Length: 322
Image (cartoon, rainbow, N blue to C red):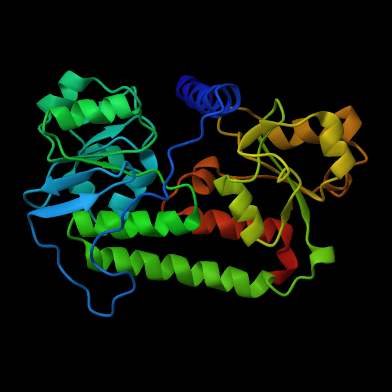
């Protein structure tokens, strides 16, 4: 439970303090340069080293040889690297790396502080690649000043997740595995689109997504908003940007037909708690018992499972179509 509370504190600190109070957004992924290998190519290529790549910071980095000792400080990228078959090369992970089950077993060190890891310990591991995510420029620059290759990747959309998988496949010489992962993900995304695209606008389900019991939600520009839209739903909080706090009156006025929550990993009885709110009894989602708790990791980690999260949302909104 302590670790779960730590995860909650981390999320709220990042989403609320950094985004709401300072007005700063997560690092943009639009400037990330894809690997030189063309996307969707028919012939799978192998990576030649030395290799120069550009990550989400816009900085070019050269790898002299294929990475054999990888430290990954971003759980979404850990899931990607595992899907590429690189478990045994992951020598350093974080306490939040919990998927796939047993992923930490081969690691030589588990970092307790994922955003500010012990630099001395990191250096002692002698990595030939460090993958970062929501990390500050100062930390990334400190690694680069030591001559440690960094791949800073923090995708915030489904399309940029695909690009990240392709780029990691290229950097680690696992292009064939990356293409297989991408084909499976895109096939599932298309299958979901085929089931919901014919739904008329007037028949689309209104959705309230709750990421914290304090009525914090995911607005326009967030991954969760994109997933709701791709699942055929209407996010009632799409009138706000990024992570924001709604009032109870706003939720009641917009009368969502489905309520989705993402915080059962640190709080028990989430559905019952929401359903018991006195002022919410007339909300359609409550009166019709359409409150669903999502696997937070599945719908917020920009890795291979994100399309499973999309499918889970779509099934919650339109069970009759699946």
